[in-house]
Length: 296
Image (cartoon, rainbow, N blue to C red; front, side):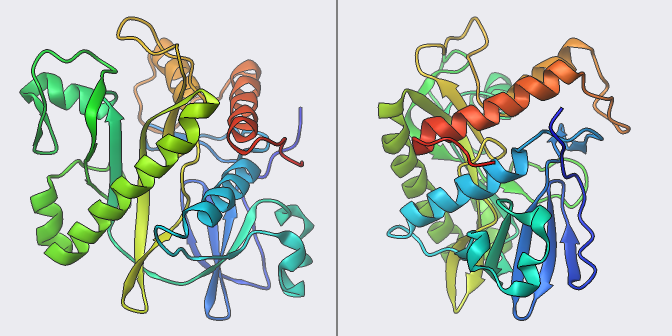
């Protein structure tokens, strides 16, 4: 099996944070984001890595960061390994999975946009006919395409689960102007991506964006429109009755549901076939979106 990178220890650089997937280091006045091959599901990190996952996340984000700059500026300086300072290039294991980024003050909200009724949105709709305070028409089915995409913010939990909140609650937490700007940008980014993906036969069911303050403006940070942060479905496979063909973490979630895991740590080991099929899905969606194979 192809080797994976699930943890980094870059001793000449100062650690900044370690997330579920990314190891973040300080580099001068900037940040170095390393996308490992770790995978999380139901907010639990698994012991097994997914081959090439970190490379897909880094290079697909770079693809989208470049194309969405007319909508909103972002934190990426470069994800091209050959353009990195020599201090970084000495770590060959980072090739293809590292991003040099400007440092921003993180907006503490997950900015989620949904074009289809799925996941926690479907459960919330079943309970009360609305999602994050947004009223929806009655009698919608699971995975129904919404007439217009909706903005459904969530808290950024350091541990445990993120919590869906209303736009009014988001405004209370971060201020009305910041909330409005983040919502407008998120919806514009979603619509741009959907128009880009539909001709490729890809349905963008939902996705999340993260923003940060830099120079008095909100910019796009973290990752963007990856299979970790989005639900990608194959067009024509979407119905209320059966599971759509997905190119994201749903394959892992479905496996975990099938073994009736209790969704609490420790995470169970993933079978080799689940690891392999997940890796194939990540590589496939990268190729479908970008029109080129990932160089690994």
